[in-house]
Length: 167
Image (cartoon, rainbow, N blue to C red; front, top):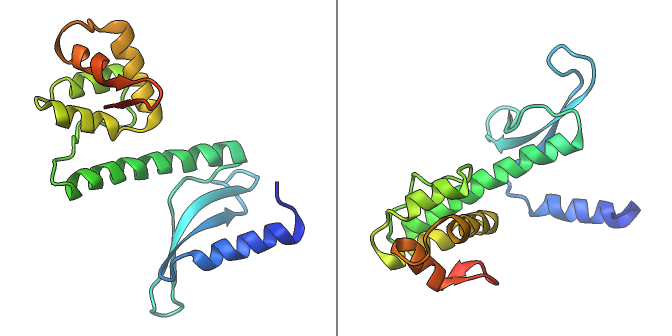
């Protein structure tokens, strides 16, 4: 954990790197929904260049402790990662597999992946998943599916357990 001037210096540097028009910020509230106590939420601020020049929106509900706040931020990060995967597919000329989401189980994701006809697209869709989801899907395929036929055989032949990717 950073202390004193070093921590302040890093905080100041991080603040200076933020975009001028949109910034992420901590929103504080003295009372939480009529209850006593304090709350903190993650918000976004927009520099509108109109009037006082700032509008703030909360991206998360108010949290009473750091652990819950961190879970909320991690959920947002997961949603942003899903959007990045979709954008990558669109930029690469493919179609995003809209049916696959980060909240699905390994079995559910496997059901969607195994319906993809093209082997390279199948591998690419799998490799676009986050590391934890790739691990979860691999565990499902290798322990619950017949790896001697169909997509499971392709999966087992191409899966690299160190990189967690289909090669």
